[in-house]
Length: 164
Image (spheres, rainbow, N blue to C red):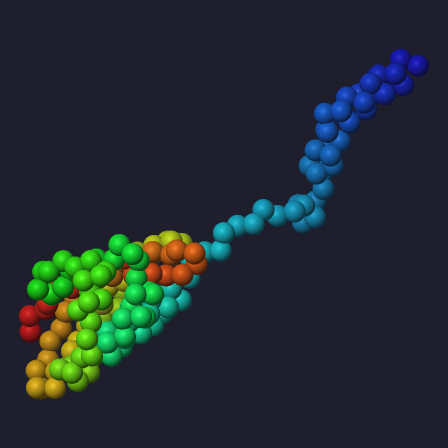
């Protein structure tokens, strides 16, 4: 009788403390237990390709005088340090955008994703320009991006003229 009473007390205590569920989970095979979701690793090559597409789109927009695309793809506190060392905020950059008539073509080379996380990234590349006059020039560009509401936006750009 004592055995039955002690089993009843133990069973009541286990139920009260939710120990029966804990013991069931511990005894279940690992394959049948719910798996905690692990964060998907960052695909750096895909991110690099996405940011490079964005860079080309923004460069095309700048050459065509399209301030709408540039305004949409930059943060409100965007800053540009140009090859001349001049620092401009977003509004000043957008005011200076005009349809480009002196540049014949451009290319982005030596593209490198310097750093990346889920919400920020740094992309570095060389911008090569061919002018209609036949002159050529290159600048080393470093852009910082942040992700806001699932969308990548340019936060800053630093340009440095390269000597040939």
